Amino acid sequence: MRDIYKGNLVRLSAINAEEAGKAFARWHRDSEFKRLIDSGVLQMPSAKFAQTWLEKELEEASVNQHWFSIRKLDDDRLLGDIDLYVYNWSARDAFVGLGIGEREFWGKGYGTDVMRVILRYAFTEVNLHRVTLTVFEYNPRAIRSYEKAGFRHEGRMRGALNKEGRRWDVLVMGILREEWME
Amino acid sequence: MRDLFRGDLVRLTAEDPETRAKIEVHWQRDSEYRRFLDAEAVMVVSEKWLKDWFEKRDEEGFGPHRYVFSVRTLAEDKLIGFFALWVDLVHSEAWVGIGIGEREFWGKGCGTDAMRLCLRYAFTELNVQRVSLGLMDYNPRALRSYEKAGFRLEGRTRGDVQRAGRHHDSLWMGILRAEWLGLDAAAVE
Amino acid sequence: MFDIQTQLFEGRDIRFGPIDYEKDPQIESKWTHDSDFMRLYGIDPARPMSPAMVKKKYEKLEKEIEESKNIFYFTIRAREDDRLIGKAVVSRIEWSNGNGWIELGIGSADDRRKGYGTQALQLLLRFAFVELNLYRVTARVQEYNEAAIALLKKFGFTEEVRRRQALERDSRRWDLLVFGLLKDEWAKQAQA
Image 1: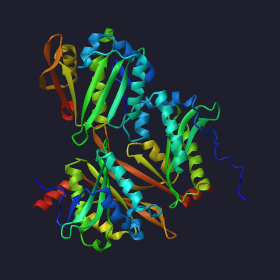
Image 2 (image 1 turned 90 degrees about the vertical axis):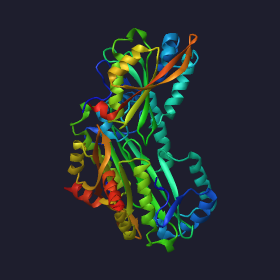
Image 3 (image 1 turned 120 degrees about the horizontal axis):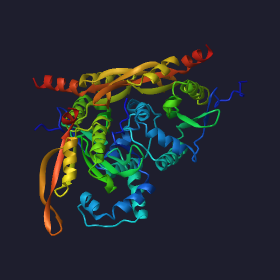
Image 4 (image 1 turned 180 degrees about the vertical axis):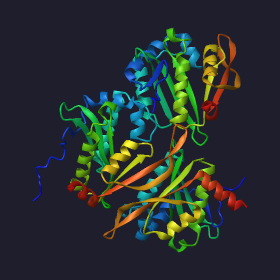
């Protein structure tokens, strides 16, 4: 068997709440990062708040939620997190959410690599039928990365975001197990 | 669409904890029934305890791991039994526990009818790949009923149940989605 | 009189011991980051756990052991340095029926194929049959876990149930096997 946690550049690891809490607090001071992953109004969590929140979420994590830290393979550095959330078991559909907090690693294939790893995990370990995601219109880098990982465009929620005085669409993308297997 | 909750002899209902407790407190005093239900040493509990238990289960709600139905006869509208499905979501398998507590309805096809509804629900609503159950070798009536519903015997664990000083086997049964689809197609023709 | 001097927890290269909250979480966390181990040991989705999560799991486990009275959990440790190698468990014991389920795991790939599993199973079975006085023990194993199947067969277990296509991994379905060993069968083996 191959190591299913491992990609070419990164691996999935357990979330260590203390370490991740500190990193979250740092990443969330970057308003660009924040706006790319979250549609809400900007908030700045403290490291302590983030850690407590993570501990609580992890404790409640069930078979519905598969949430990992993303680490670089060569030096084990923490880059971000990825969360696969199964919201409908009879349809076997899950939402995936991805954030690379360390901006020096944007646009270098890390996101695409980890998305490939989580899709393999979703389809061969959690045995899902499809994976869904949403991405903001003003994030073309992510959209390209998801396309590369095999996601298809399925629709857009028009004007669902209001940022910098104008409306933006939220794009819906999905990938089916059959498509992934090819 | 077909009525998922109605068979030839019985229908599936959700009952209030009070109603269930009032009736099922009598079922569990029937040690023969209890010994068919599982391998544990039989025990009796109060009506209040049962009601609290059902209330707690109700609060947890239906699914996605657990689904419980009461079984009523169509003719008399009498509450005669129940079944529950526990789902292994990742491996797409459901386990069934089923019981007809009113003994005058044993051997009359009500259990088999309820099981058919149970399988239809598991395969077409929960969309599982497989349904499993266990029973004891001293319950041949149930074995026949499950075979009629399409289950196959997959093995027996030797002597893992002790009743009245003797060792009995647990029987393990399963039905796959493809097998059930074949049965269903045959029934439609 | 029986041989009370027989040490139930001591094997040739390994011994059974309790959980070490200081050292074990770090090591078990490492095991969970090895997806092969996770897929051989259990049927839940493989997922890594941090040392903090492992510690929480131990606390929950010890509470459950105390409350349920039907679980016996041992860590497997190397005799030479008391290092954590694996775990051995009897659980879901039905006292009135005299049966229980066993589980055995050697965490690190470096520690496999060294006879530790054989020694641990020897200790675990002796414990189940002469200390817990069970009539039989049951083990569940995935069809693809050849090492576990070979080990169970070596100890005289019988394949009793084949739960067809009960497991889904790598986009295909696998059988889950149930093995059983009766006390008589074990006693004959142990004497021979």
